[in-house]
Image (tube, rainbow, N blue to C red; front, side, top):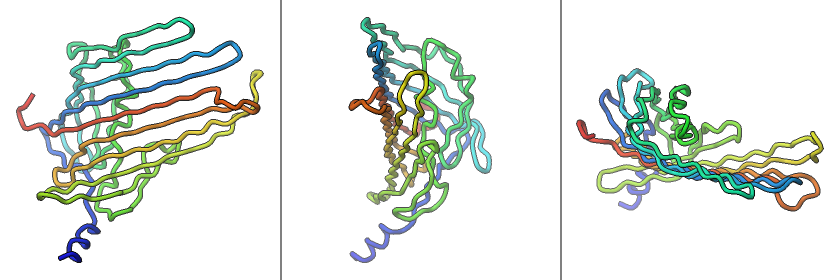
Length: 252
């Protein structure tokens, strides 16, 4: 029995979305981003927190992808700029402020959104919340520890199947990702040469039985350093979480 259980744990799992016309999903997205910059003239900080609720409906399915509509229900949050003085901008919006956003969702989970549609309401900046929303899946069966490229090609992101859970007739897959890069910045405009490093991690849970994502977490940290300075002259952090729930037909 033990050998059979271990063998099942090593069986490949099928990591691709199962989509049909009329399928609806509830999305909850949370974003926290901050940036701190120091130069001879002083220091300033920017922070942004945003929570977004939306639904995603499959309008039409094809062989490899589906045409979907994203409907934003509400957003809440704040953008803060601090340069001695503090300037706050609310990021609150209700459903009446938005029109449906056309997008394409591939079977591997890449959500391709019409960028022009994201500019409908200039008072609410949501592009960072929705772009590259879901981690790409291999689109087929993979074994434990299998790897594939992520969407963050600039920072050489690699995803892998980190674990598989089988319980009460359900199968869930844990996917983890790592990314990183280092860029040399030449001296220019009176600034010394330096480097910019980026490190990122991601985790997601995919419901293999249901054929849809359950949750995803992405974190990025970027530091820029110049020669002769111990502390970084610029630090940026970015953290986004998303939860996905498949809605029953007819549920609003």
